[in-house]
Image 1 (cartoon, helix red, strand yellow):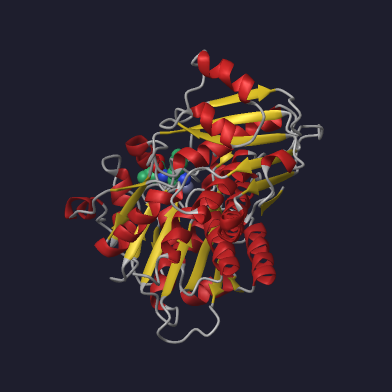
Image 2: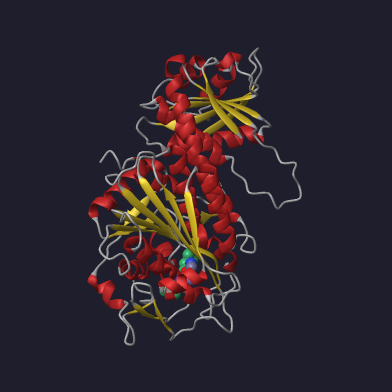
Length: 497
Ligand code: BES
Ligand code: MN
Ligand code: ZN
């Protein structure tokens, strides 16, 4: 779908449907009249019946032709002022879905009230693009309704800002869509090799340097943890390294590494998972997918920060050659790990990637952020309301919390404590790969902490947020693309703090 900004008045625009945002404070009929829709009569009825008040989350569809070109008017409530960006973002999404279902193939969207036209346009574009997202390439029936084009209408004085907002919102939404597509691809298509190919293609298209470390490279680097997880699969593991080098970068340019778990199918291995919902474990690469999305957005936005994206990619399967409970693996930083559960594989593949990010990259990153569908325990703790955030650095954690505020990707910080560090001590090795049920999300984070060597590091456990069944607002069934907007917003703000 194409989205652009124009200064055309609503009465002249060539679209079948229009989205108008209506807030709760001001007289709604005045707002509809000011929008110049010619739908005032129909709206009055609705207003009089109190079925639409402009409350957040409300959507009303009006069909009326009073000389206007618009046949369908979709009213979207934005509630009280200062409700935050989630309200217009999700409102734009729900409004766009209503317009699509009413048969509109071309959609006009009036800018919602916001402190800046740039932000308003960006928010609306994210909402429309993500709300209309579907993953239906494998369905034979191709006749579903779709919106082909959307036009954001801005007053002439705000057009330039709105255009920039549309551009930025499109870049962010495209990256989220990329991650949704990668996540929704089945495991027989989205293998480690496929992820590496996609990363290479993104690099070529957007000017990123992409290297892929193969099994032999991992052996040379002593990455026994990543190799151990991969040894039960016929699919070769990959360690994808993508680098964004801004123009004119110098030694003073900050470097940030972003690492994502790219487990393309997690059966649990020898400690096999129950069959129920095991198919969802194709989503276990969503952290790695989010890294590809972040790298694409960073390059397209040409951010003035050096960003290195790393994705350890592997399958986790039971096999005659698979790693087993009781095995001891040695990671590339020399740490020995007793395997007590082969289903705690994410921390293993991440350990070698984190050690690589913090000890092999030049220049050394000043911070490392990882994203991983790491623990069921995090889903128990936070559900889908927020990703778990664990960090050894308050400043880095604050950067992510600030980005979460507006990005649409919420986080909730959780503690790292010696009690949890104790839980993963092994009798036979330096660490064991599971600390049991208690505080499972936190013992997993404490495990990762052992591989960053004191570098400021933040871990995002996205197990509860990376995919879902919800279809409200910007969410869609399947992969959510969580983490892309969060990390890109944090990186955008990096230079200014
Ligand atoms: N990929 C799973 C975590 C997961 C489970 C994410 C359910 C989303 C939904 C991870 O590899 C895993 O299996 N973790 C185990 C760890 C345990 C064995 C210590 C878990 O959470 O049960
Ligand atoms: Mn697992
Ligand atoms: Zn997993």
